[in-house]
Image (cartoon, rainbow, N blue to C red; front, side, top):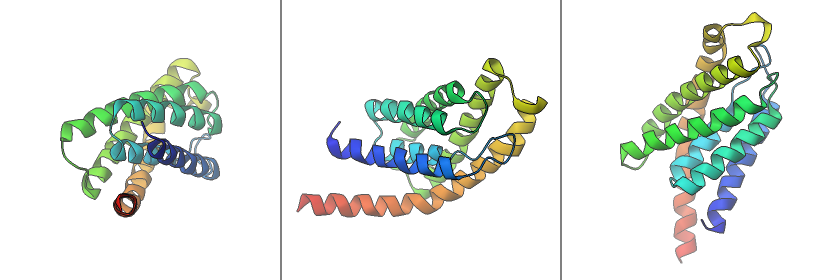
Length: 173
């Protein structure tokens, strides 16, 4: 993996961390996980096992450190690693370049996987806050988060694709 890739992946994690930190929790301390959007973007731009593994671990740790969910550190790490592996597998199965529509659909599916994984691990390890149920939190937090992340990807992905093309063209001259 070259330095350029590491810098870009770090930038995505950093942007995701800022978004994850400034977005307030709205339901039992849970909040939309915008770090997922950045992680998915990094996976689509650099679809190799090393980059995906590094991105998943870094995103999980940063997400865990900035979470407002009580006892959410471990569930965040597990969730990001599992989600990144499944997302990478789905992306690889498509065997084609991502388009904004594919990116949006994969983001929605990835967010559902992430939310279900997070809630399952949190339920098993620390329990869900305030007597909330898995289904209740899934409907109240995961579905709106999937919507927000999908819209964000629809906006962000074409911009980043354009910037990557320009950067690559400039660096070749």
